[in-house]
Length: 232
Ligand code: ADP
Ligand code: MG
Image (cartoon, rainbow, N blue to C red):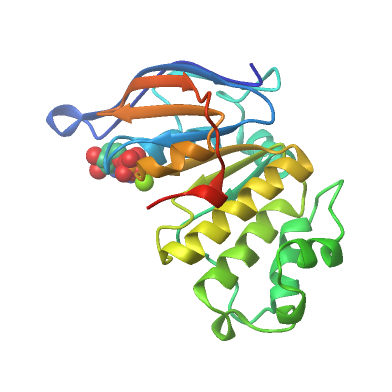
C-alpha cells in the first residue's frame, strides 16, 4: 500500500475532559486511487485527514507514505513532507484576497521542485478567462477551482480534500468533483476525499467509512461510475 495507517489512536483534552476521537485506525490506500472517506459529522474524518497532512499529532500509531514514516518527524521534516507530497483543499477556499487567480495558484508552486505549467493548469481548471481576476470577482465554484489549482500546481503525490463541495450547490459540486477526478487521472494523484455525502462513493476506488472514530467499512468499489453520473 502506498499510504499506510497503523493503529492510530487520537484523543483531545485531558483528565475527565479527554475524548477519544480516533480508535485503532488501521488501513491502507493504493497509489493513484480515489479513496472516499465517509462518515457523519463528528466521526473523526477531518482529524484523520489532518494527521495524514502532518498538521495534527497522534497519541500512538504510525503513518507511512511511500515508505516514509511521518509520525515523529520534526517541524522541518514535516514542512518538507507537506511541500513535497501534499496538496490540501478545504471547504473554505482560503484564497489570498489581493492576489489574482494566477497569483494564488503560483503561491502553491513556491518551493516546489517540479511545478506544473501554470498556463496549462489554468486551462485544465477552466480558469483561463478568469486568470487576472481577484477572488471576490469569482463564483464559489471558480474560487474552489483556484484553490484546487493552488494545491495541484506542485504536482503532489497525494491530494487531501476536506468537504471540498460543502459550500457549493449540486451542479457546481458535480463540476468540482469531476475536476478532482480529472486531476487524479491526468497526474496519477492519489486522492483522499472526505465527505458526509454517501452519493460520492460512486466515484471511489476505495470506500472508507468512519463512525465514532472507528472504521466501519473498508471496501473496494467494484462499480465505479464517476462524478459525471452522481445523483444527489
Ligand atoms: P468530522 O470531520 O468527521 O466532522 P472531526 O474530526 O472534525 O470530525 O471531529 C471529531 C471529534 O473530535 C468531534 O467530536 C470534535 O468535536 C472533536 N475535535 C476535533 N478537533 C478538536 C480539537 N482541536 N479539540 C477538541 N476536540 C476536537
Ligand atoms: Mg470535518
